[in-house]
Length: 411
Image 1 (cartoon, one colour):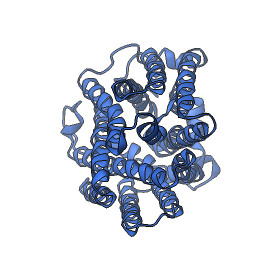
Image 2: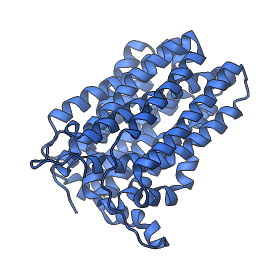
Image 3: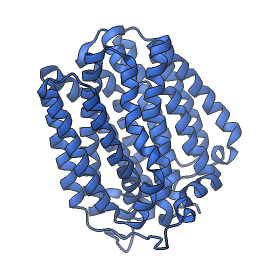
Image 4: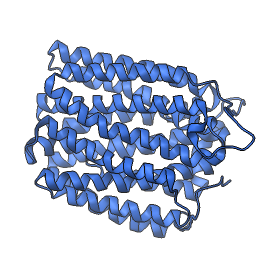
């Protein structure tokens, strides 16, 4: 463990390695958000087909699903810091590829999808290594604070990234992509500054038993399985991000700047919640709070789906982000505290598949439904189904519902 003291601090920023890690997360997430907004607007501007917006998510999810048995054990057997260095180098090259596509004036979106597929491969390895590294950089008493602060870095990116991307894209797509390239370079330099942390690994022969250890752990730990699967179905059904270009262009008539506001609104709500929860963590009834706020996430999505002006859409998305952040912090804290370090990489790899399914596959679900029944129907039905999932999980996973505190490891 890096940066230990005689009295372990509960503040993650007290640990030098975590500070550089946090900066890496901030810069990389910021760059990813800029790329996401620019790619979505550019592809939709070229094809005017909402199904292509769904394909943007699908091509990034396929590698995550295909490589899950490899990425998890890699994060447990090899240096997580080195894996992040390699992955961020690939992300940097992908951002450069998208920059070239934009300034070349090409309209062949197959190049974009190919680049996003490679980006998906990098993210497949990056996600479990990133999630597993943070607990190695702080003491167990600071894990909850680290989760909240890391989430605040993500959400700061979700606020600033889309707004900046919308403004920069309005000036020039090349400037937007160039900003993403610079940010990914900052992320790469930041992870290189993280001291090599202690990492417990299972140095046993690779076998199906060791490869599948993450799946076995999750399915046996009903609290972890319930939390992960809840997020999977809630965001898979309730995600509306992929259709924001449709809302910005065709429903709200707000342009790329409006798209930036729509993409940034959830992040504003989320960062406020992340800051509050880093200072005032949940002390009791964590499981019930998780289920309640997932239901509220679905309700806010439903309201957004029916919106016909920015005055309704932006506040609705603000609450989408705020309610989602409560559930994210609770779920991620449960994941880290309930999982032993020797299988954390494999468990986080499986979690990455669930997250990928809920995000990227959810984008495909939204795009395909919008293609069939329209964007409004796709979003509103998804929000209603998310509320139903939250109510159902309270019955299916009583162990999750009865979780009390989030301030100590549970094994």
